[in-house]
Image 1 (cartoon, rainbow, N blue to C red):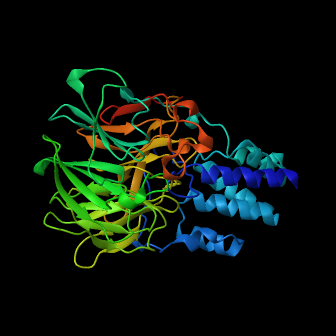
Image 2 (tube, rainbow, N blue to C red):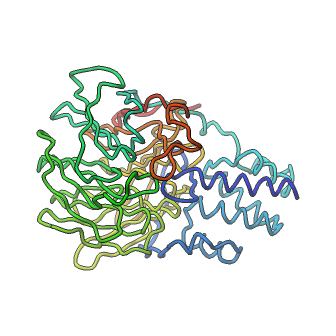
Image 3 (cartoon, rainbow, N blue to C red):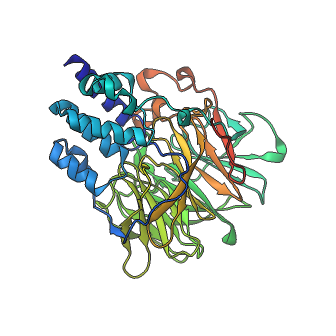
Length: 447
């Protein structure tokens, strides 16, 4: 019984470590498969909220797994329930599901599973694999010092030669001109009056605007002074050109920009998706709260007819736009997990996903299939880079993804204070590493 108790504790730790905003979530995708069968007709998204995270009984979790068949987070919860119930067959089935998706359990949980199902099945359980070896495919572009507190997203603007980093605790955008060179301290701070914790950043090149999401998170200092919504900054002068407020109480984190200039933002706390047309003075509700548990990345199709949203615990959704938006669950016939995704972008016909809610963390390209809301294939671009702590958000520029490589969410507590009175520097984060991943180059393959 003690080994099972250890496993339950380890599963809880694994589920809770992945997201700085959200609660449990962990996922691992497979390597590229040669092809897939048809996934069938589009399926509606199953609405989820905070109460969904409280489901703990086996029948309830089995129903949730049926509603979200590609969620490793749900499957981990189901494995935990099977362990608690002493259901040997259920444990073996859940463990094999995770093994197929190359999801690794902590050692104590692994031991408990082996103890229950027997050593004869050990080869079917999550564990080492040549496909779990590190893939170091990105290059270090820049570093930024700890004066930029809790960096969240990184963008390179080739037209101006500038690099931009948004911050959660500093509540500012930091800028560096690449021609000037310099190290971690060669950044200047751009303060935006009233800006809150700044999350996603995106460039609307056609209109010369840099957009950032602004809101209130647990780590936000002085939250009562925060503007909630999206802020548009002139890419050349850095002057604030537009402020579009979100509904009361909504926090905008990740954002995406449509071809017509509409800006979309996700609220990871309330679960809604919001939009701001080019002439809007207020953001409108596109997808109401209670649809998603913790929406993160947003990627708009080049046609502007729909957008993809990552729900951290449950998977991917596609939202068709128009007079009556509709939310579909993204399907795949591959044995792949689609949850645990933080950043999300579209490049050619691929969804590029930073999956930091998995073990090990990775960046994946999901090839979009024909029709609505389906994944036809996928490949790993980068995985378990030793330079990472937690890969975070960024932006696509041309054929490359620029992103934060060593997130520091674990260093900051409520109001931006360092945990246990320690400074961020004292917790081992002297600089934040900023990476460039070239999507036009195939990553190195493991044997």
